[in-house]
Length: 164
Image (tube, rainbow, N blue to C red; front, side, top):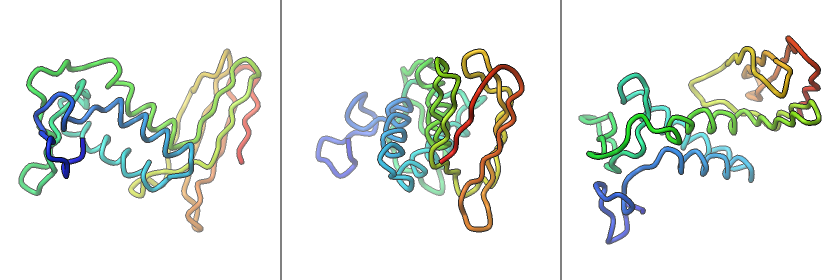
């Protein structure tokens, strides 16, 4: 619930708390419709939140208080499960969305559509990514023009890697 709503309560389970898995779905939705700026904003917030929890273990939810200079870490929700499986998958899912990874194991294909990286990250390497029975190393790097270049090295199996 938006903090501008009358019923907003940052300590409420559904009226102001933050759910990492919901935010990763929002990130994927923005990416699907080319809302890169919003997707990156969500990813940055999730990443910052994860860095505020012990061992980067995302809880089921956390309190929806606005970040301040004095309190830059998220406020834990008192009875949240931590870690929580769907919350643990939030950052990997959001990153997969940002990178534009669209695997199709049945057809032995990996499509990479309009990859983007957070502004604070100029290059990223993913090694030994499995698509079906194939494995591939992927390297993403921001070019001088600001676009994200992609290099792929299929390590095992048959895999066609396509970029747009």
